[in-house]
Image 1 (cartoon, rainbow, N blue to C red):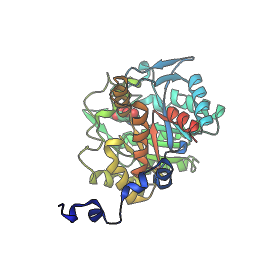
Image 2 (image 1 turned 135 degrees about the horizontal axis):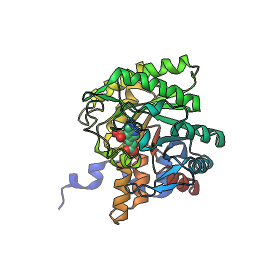
Image 3 (image 1 turned 60 degrees about the vertical axis):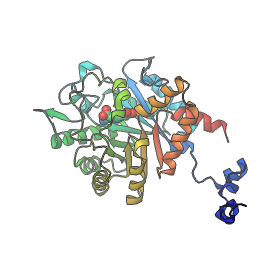
Image 4 (image 1 turned 180 degrees about the vertical axis):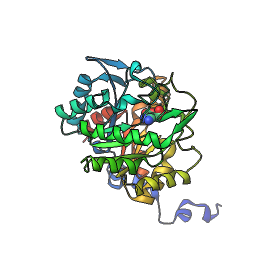
Length: 338
Ligand code: PBG
């Protein structure tokens, strides 16, 4: 005869977790987190010229677009209810130099794109990345001199660049360079230039990650980058240091925080949300996108399910939204289902 204590009822008492999982209607009743179109921020790549839709090999389904095509894409995104775009330029190689001076040109590719999108699609938010890497001949995010990234001089450049971006119509400045002190300096610069209502979404912790590979192909910096970015991005081993770095950004006036990459750093998203209570966004970066696409192309993963599951997991980890190259695909799916 079986020992009574080994029977399921004895072990579980009155608590059977599977009651809440027994049917779709029941599962919907207790679902804790939901992905909605409001959670999506769509990063797009801009190239000079017109009529251009140029596929990026390592990011199947993602294209570099000329401004006219980007305007069409922005309209489609707005129609689907996506709240905001994040724009990244692929700057002509002849315009890149040691100090990234093209970032200061009020008429540079990114500022032109902002102005054109704002004019044609006024009700979508525009988030512009502020960092020197698309503009430098060495692919670093800062001014590179004598083997070093010069912090304070870079910050001065970024402040001017942020003001030019705001002048062009950018709604949110997203400093992605990880220089010390740049959030406070940019805030003061924007305010002094009359841009009090332009927000700052700080790439509060950006890790020195391998997952940016396809992005560097997309903006043509992979062949240029000398060395690595470990002297300014955070070591993937360090969570507490990441929090200390974000705390400075909060003190300096960041309105929103971003964690990048996303999925391998969900613990950081959660800790940041708990620590500061500010809106926290995750960037599901190019390499995360490429991983899912590559596995799906091989038939090793159901690509659509992997896309939806990873994005939902960001919500569970406390994120208020996600920058994702899947944004348009997801918005289309969400608009079909309920
Ligand atoms: C750099 C920047 C990077 C990304 C956006 N801005 C990383 C880098 O090149 O070091 C990565 C985005 C992605 O991988 O999707 N300022």
